[in-house]
Length: 140
Image (cartoon, rainbow, N blue to C red; front, top):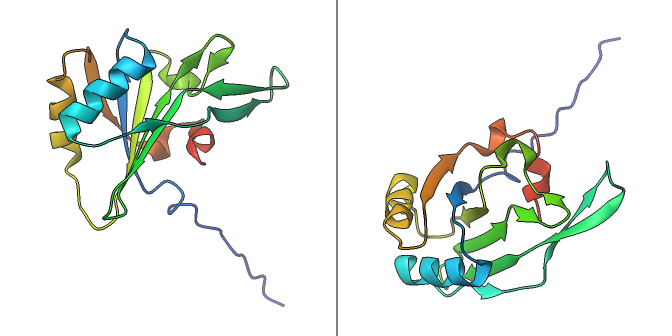
C-alpha cells in the first residue's frame, strides 16, 4: 500500500513585506515619523505578546497598527524590550514594519527608500521572512 504524505503550506501566514528599521528613538516617535512619511495613521494597540520558551515567560513588545480602506495592513512592532528580543537573529534591528497588501500593491524598494529619508530612521532594510529562524514570532 502506497503512503500518502500531506505537507502543510505556511506561505500565506508569511505573505507580507517585512522591513527592519534601525532607530534610537522611542516607539511613539518613530511611529509618528512613519505615519507622516507613508501618509498612514498607525495607532498604539495592546502589546504584542510572545511566549519565550527559554525563560518560560510571556514578553510584550510595543505594537502599532493601521488598516486602510483598501484592506492594506501596516504594523510596527518593536524588536526589543527589557526582557528580550523578538527576532534574535536580527538583534541589530530596533523595529519591524510589516505590510500585508490588500487591494494596493506596494513596491518594497520604494518603501525602504521613503523610510530611509525619514528624519529619525538611521537605516531601513528589506528582509526575507522565510529566511528567519524566529519567523513564527511574527504571526499574530
